[in-house]
Image: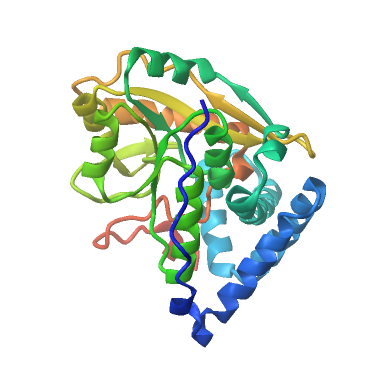
Length: 314
């Protein structure tokens, strides 16, 4: 079933005519033009953007390299450097894919995706059971949501953008393509969606120090991790269905994967449940490690500790 398309109100362009927004307008215009390019050219432009970012963003390059070194110590120095470069290319492609997500044609996107496991979502809908679409922050995040939206309606959690113009553009395009976009800090709204029987995209894989945080192993390193998936599933009665999207080789498009619902989940042990989730995420990351979001400070330590790996890399 295709999701309903909402029509946003008129764009409040008068709010964004100040000079401080001109650079953002130019970037948005270039992104909009990139949607008109052939798919091969889009990938090429994305790789060029990523290559430029590799050199212009040394702090992010350092973060990515530290993360890759911690997660893949078995790789040699050259392989880790190559993976870091590939990751920045994936980031650049992800930027172009965001434009395709916002302005791309649905029929064109249908021709680029191979979907697996849609029956798990369909079964939950037939049973009237809500679904937590358990995912992670891959560079395919934006395009992955649009691709799943071609097949089934769902709600998504998102982080507000600090730039008000970008926030308005992203919000309006998500309203157009998805049933509902929920700010990631609005847990009550997420639970409301689940209790109403909807599927909700949810990614608990980033560094987290809130109330429901625990040091959970991630690639062998204990890091502050959100354990709320257990609580959300228990309160709402939702099935937890792992959901991931990968770029396929060359210009063959995308592989959209919905795995079987987690069995025996949740338990009475949020720590053990979250260990299980992280092990699942690790397996998925190893499928295409360059496509995971490595520029996030995943292994950031509390302020009162002196073993921050990112400071050590300075």
